[in-house]
Amino acid sequence: MSDKRMVKRFSAVVRVSHWMYAVSFITLGLTGYLLYGSALDWMIPLFGSQEGAMVVHRVAAVFLIIAVVLPLLMRPREVAAWLSEVFNFTSADVAFLKAFPAKFIGVKVEVPPQGFYNGGEKINSIIQIVCGLGLITSGLFLWLAAVPPLIMYPLHALLMAIAVASAIGHVYLALLNPVSNEAIRGMIAGDISEKYMKENHGRWYQEVFKARKGGGA
Ligand code: HEM
Image 1 (cartoon, rainbow, N blue to C red):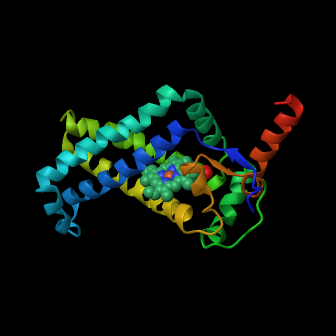
Image 2 (cartoon, rainbow, N blue to C red):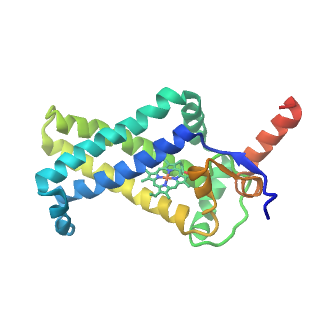
Image 3 (cartoon, rainbow, N blue to C red):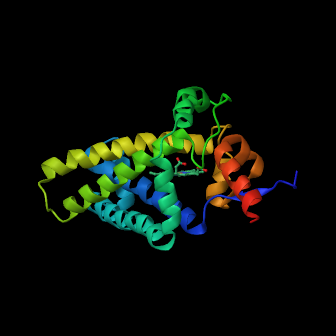
């Protein structure tokens, strides 16, 4: 039906930042792996050599840092709202996490109304924030050769492994899972349907529509 009412979810700056981060992250994962393992050695010629892959790794790292700094400078309130939401864990989030295994395989399960982010998205956000900051810091130390690589290499690889595991689950849910794949529209066009908002982010729906009724906005 074309009378779907839409609700704004993400600003253009946040969407650009997300996709820039995602592309940089995947490039960093692939080029970084070439240093540690051999399963992807067939990719080395794509970069000319292993040294070429390392140059691409550093360029991608710069883009990843820009993707982090951009919304901090241009949409600080949206970033602050994201941080305060994801670090505020409620009983509704715990209930969501208990139902998560069933949801992950596409089974619809009733959970208490979720906020702007559900419990799973909060966990993904926290993992990506902690790992992202750790990867940037350890990566800069390695780049500037400020700390013995013997300590930084394993730490850098461990953080990436955790971030990749979470990102694989996240991409699966965003692209393939029938329960949550409508969310992709929010990250591409910036809006989602009111119906999807009500069904999947009930607490956020209540907050927005109560505020509109109460405040006359
Ligand atoms: C390339 C495939 C990817 C797709 C299709 C995708 C899709 C999405 C979508 C649809 C959302 C909004 C979800 C919502 O409405 O709450 C989102 C949010 C987010 N994305 Fe991605 N994403 C991808 C890659 C990545 C990568 C590689 C990372 C980090 C390494 C990442 C980190 C995040 C974070 C932290 C959020 C906010 C929390 C959440 O929704 O889990 N994304 N992504």
